[in-house]
Length: 125
Image (tube, rainbow, N blue to C red):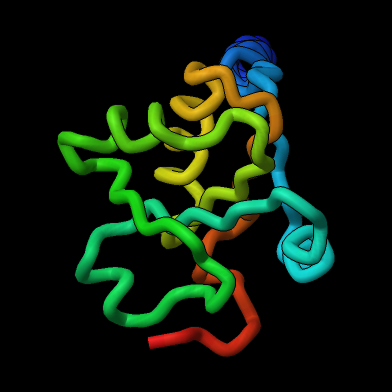
């Protein structure tokens, strides 16, 4: 029983470290449509070119592969006064991309919860 208690303590401590408030907000899928209606909101797909070819959210304005060598330079050129919503396949890469965008001085960055896998709208090809 003691070992289980130590295990739980470790798990909660680790979870607390990985979920620090870095300024990136999570956007629920149900809120995406209304958020996109707001002024100065930009939707960015950070998946690979091959993934984008299989379909993307129609309102996407930029396609910036987070794993591409020029990604850091590309996000440096974005307008820091805009509101950005990042998405990928499941939300992991877009979370990383959103954190990188925050380091460039952007104050309003969202990560789309569940990525395109959780998107229920019609995709554009």
